[in-house]
Amino acid sequence: MGGSGGEIIRYVFNGGVATLVHVGVLVFSMELLHIPYAGLANFIAALAGISVSFTGCRFFVFRQHDAPVFHQGVRFLVLYACMALLHGLVLYLLSDLLSIGYLYGFVVASVFQFLLSFFGNKKFVFT
Image 1 (cartoon, helix red, strand yellow):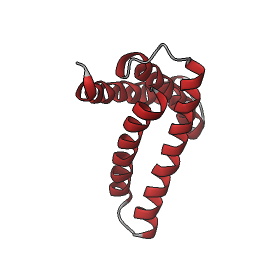
Image 2 (tube, rainbow, N blue to C red):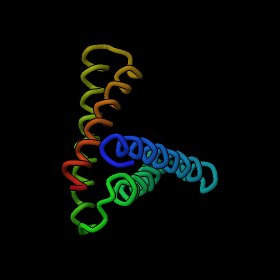
Image 3 (cartoon, rainbow, N blue to C red):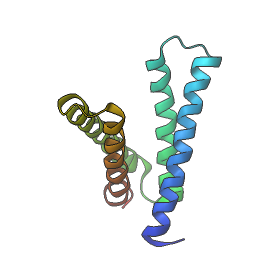
């Protein structure tokens, strides 16, 4: 599948795999390694998920593996830091300031995050 339609389908698939890795590493860290802090276990799991996401975007989604990996990696980390801030800001605005349920705020923030991550990866990271 070429073009943007194929990229979107591959992006969703890649995101699903990265999410499964994130959750899998989180559960593994908590249940088998007995890491006593969920925040630490989630941080480790997030690094694994983000690594899988980057690799999948580079080789599978956007197929831009000829560019220097360091250059793409730095841009990817900048994009994901911006997305984390945006996600937190949207959740804060909707849930804390406007008193909309946090799960609704989370969904809205996640939609913004998905759109920003797809177009940011396509236009900023893997160009």
